[in-house]
Length: 422
Image (cartoon, rainbow, N blue to C red; front, side, top):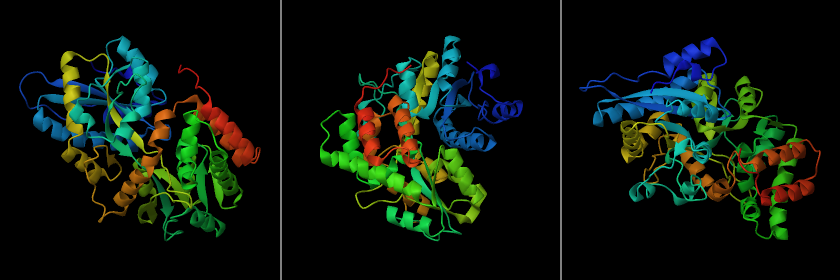
């Protein structure tokens, strides 16, 4: 059913008008006979994104690419699209589902799909063996509940990259040592205490295997403890550098970057259009810097299609058909090449990199991030241990605790049983 405006989260009348005009729209007319089958799709935004006219245009543009091709096969189909912050989407979907107004499909992060499936707000996805074979098994683990049910079908991957200002940094640092050296030479950098945006440094410092052992509650050897402490000591040392500043959120980092006050930041591939509009040709993009002890370990976000619980039989079938279409190799390639902001989830789709430094950086980020899939499957973004360790990192970078103290406390937190989800 249509999604009434009274259920749409908003902070101002202007935002609501923009949403009504740009999002909750029928993306195209129907030329087939009979009444059109309408598929209602709810999109979720990350916590480091602000819903505004630019973001609405990006999301609706990406959906238009999918919708245009799908209607060539299913002409009598229309799409209606709404956009919500993922940290508030649960309450919205709950109200709508109770009224029979819930979406047929949700396009959200994998962690969000898992949380909603646990709350019975999305259905387990009935992926076929052929569909499952399209994806990296380690990435599918990130989308499975303990009982093995799949929360959604992977469609895209949002890569974590490095963004830099070419006017200040002609070449991006490829190692952590280069990053520190640039910052010491008056080319400032910014990092976030948001742990999911900071975990990339754990791979560069060789701490990922030890973190995995702690999450698995395996015995921690002196070497494991040393590996984690080396990582945390680097973070504290970086904070002590005059040219590196830690911020609380990704939004704050990007604001400093576009203002010109910092020359280098970690960034999400989906932020590139917005940053490019601000910086133009000055925007440089690269993979995150590796370290002496290993490759960077970016947490690349999986975006999935999840099934709503209040669909009609026809709506459910169209949702499944659209999901199948979205992971077709030709569609996946077009989405990646057309936007140059996402990677295909289909592992058999090869992205050409010779003509685009951005695509090359994204592919490298995908390779770097493969080492952290096991950790992400055990430590989802909504796990309370994430929040506890973010507080720990904040204390560390401000010098309130030593790397040794932080190591012991982090291991204890990782080995603890997470509180039941609310």
